Length: 460
Image (cartoon, rainbow, N blue to C red; front, side, top):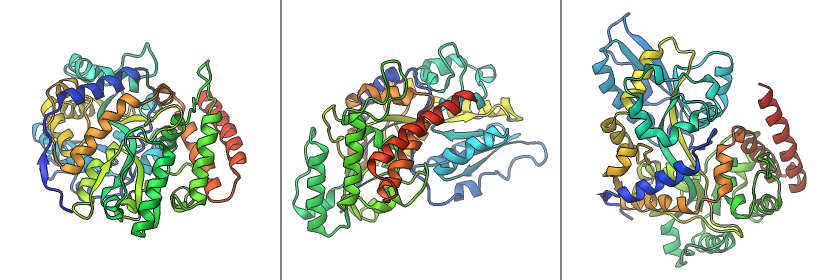
């Protein structure tokens, strides 16, 4: 099937609604596992060419940026920085492209040791706050940041009294499923409509997989963040009335049992969740792009990657989140660029982010990476995305999912130790998928792991 590339019409109303709903609900957010896809390599042409030869030898301030990409974010960042370096010939930026796993697991260890890059693209926005440089004293016009990024600046801060400016949002995201439409068409099976349950989608994808001889009906990224959307739809609250973690309630338990059953009955491949240990992240994009699964539970950040990698191999589209008894919820999130306070060049690093935050530069980044902006002026004016019909449709679908996000999803994303919850979920449910733990024992371990990890984090 072909995907003629077309321009997405300017949709300022949709973008404004997306920004307003997410930013309002997440205004107190302190932590964010965007949980993005993991590039297959730790280097790329963009990284290899990241040090411009035109910079004066011996006189340049060299800055290193760790960057992971869901699609082409790092390459586009590097290309945009060429304009910055032209204006500032005494500053060079080396973009080190790394797997998302390195951002999740290795970067915090580096920072705790007082090491690491000058800046990085991160998703644990509030959880790494103690390592951030406050950009405010180094910015030419902090009021510009407050005006255009004011609704997301709190996500990086340590608390209500913290007025620092720490990061530049590079995307807003929401989780949800993507399906192989071509397989549905070939099987002659109608896609379930908005409001359909998870059971409805399991039944439909089984019919498609059987008719088309595809190995598996469904898969989900190995991520506690991704699982949370399903659990919350089943009624999971994640916290008690006092705001303390109380993760394993009836809703969480019911979803966990259903999830393990999906792996036992062949609905999902065991390799994704059961093939890795601990809190390791692994997405299901390889399986989806190779048409080995009918549906992948992932998120909006995958649009550019799919648009580029799938091409005309098959038709794909995002669909509304399936429903449980409590609702049809995804999980909000995002990623941003931050500067670490151990940098030897704080002024120069702030100049880099200030440049990337400029309206015309930021707008180009969003269009070229097919991401949803957090910049107020850009969202008001709208963007002319150059996307295929599939990507355009999917982007609109994900934006429409924001209104269905349930309150516990925002509370979870705003919890400063949500990484403890996500990692425990992945680790123990992964062991259950692999046959190492019963579901009941996995749930007991999840509770114990979370309590221990939160206590440890609070002692630091």
